[in-house]
Length: 209
Length: 216
Image (cartoon, rainbow over all chains, first blue to last red):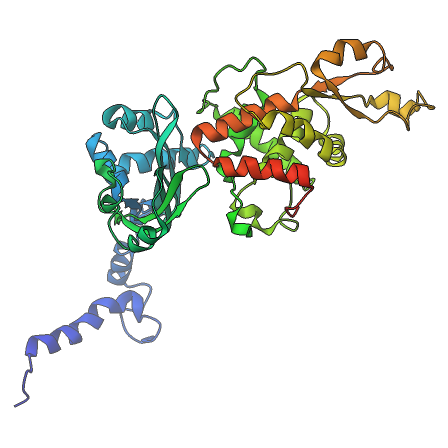
């Protein structure tokens, strides 16, 4: 007796081709009844397996969204798909896939969270946000997602070069006291600018929706 | 300074830049950092910028391979002069050569204001006055002067009324461009949103004084 032999498994293998046969192997078996075009049964089966015409590519498109953006959206009670649909509407109007400052959804984000979201762009399945926070004197801090692998948080401040090197791979909270939404981002490298600002290259967590 | 250190304005901001530059006010009113432009207006501004790029202006990928990453402040200022001219209905095939030939002078007028961008317009600001009438050029009208009088002259704001009736009294249309005010508006917008930091401005000013360094 063969060990692990399951008669049902064998049955499946034998029965499967019999189901597929009418449209799959019709050409090979010229003599069989099923291959004959006049056979009513074979026609019925093949028609029922045609893909439905309502199928679109948008349904299977999986977009990526950064952790900070997701937190902002959930705080303001918006779904990522709503933003995505608004961007798709722009494509239909042949405009750039960027929700700008005055778009109602972007304004809603600002009103609900107090964070000054400037734009939400979609570039190759990634939703990229830009934040420019101001106070009375001018810019306070900024967070720009230029590309999925190039996200820059900048703020006023200066730190010694040794600490710059030591902070690589650490969480952003170790260095600055960011808004709640920026928690969990990892510092890649830090560069100071001539006018006393820090440009911090960070890696947020990307999540699909 | 390596090439990657030069700060660049991403091309997504160019339509806003064009709008800010073309609506610059000399009275120093606060700038709306986030102008609300309709899709129609954006399309028109974009087509103008694209039209200029067909004349390799402000630069081309051949001259500056890093152009794909955005425009430097110098290139933004170049774009600005040409945009001002074509907004005054000067055709691009006329505007771009004028901006190219008189680039040094345009930059000198720009540098004059960019040294202190928070200051208001002063009587000493240089205003570019373009006198290149199409018919006048075709007729070769003031033949004896045509070599002596360049098509673009830079005249201090206060001297303008005086010169209008003396040196600028030649027949033909005159177009006055306040490039300094436009450059200040451009810089206030850039620094207000911190799209570039102050190093870009000081670097440009150093370049203008020391001659061209950057490619393209």
